[in-house]
Image (tube, rainbow, N blue to C red):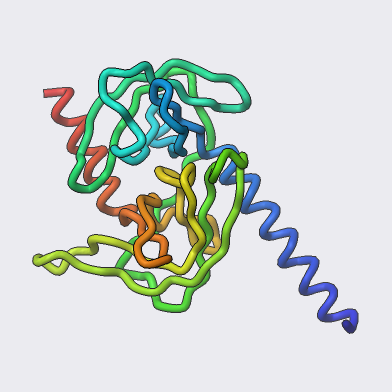
Length: 198
């Protein structure tokens, strides 16, 4: 390896380390009763966390782990069809991820998933964007990538190489990771908060 290639490799490694650190600060681990844990994203800067609805077992005690400390949380809203849940965790804070418009995504882009798969804390996985699927109104419905996901990744972020939030990881279909687009998540949160304020 020549000096130029070595420098490029070190720069790429440094960038990935920075991305991993940003995501580590922007996510929490979510626990619902005695069930397995998932991942959540700090949202809006007001003690809010977004995760998957399937990570939350209704009627159970909710906790989020931020900076190595478990804190109580409670559910504010669910949207099972989009597999989203909004939690209130007043004592949780961290950096907010910039949102990426799904309309700007292109097949072949590198994407990164962060979470706690199989109990492994703060794992980072890399993959390639396959497609953005659409609903009947032609709005983005799912983001599909060949990123490796496992139980514990649910509710965690899928980001681009610049750390912008592409979507929230939800499931694995035929070996491919499937995420809820960030724009859809934002609409869910805005609607949930407006309904509570009404």
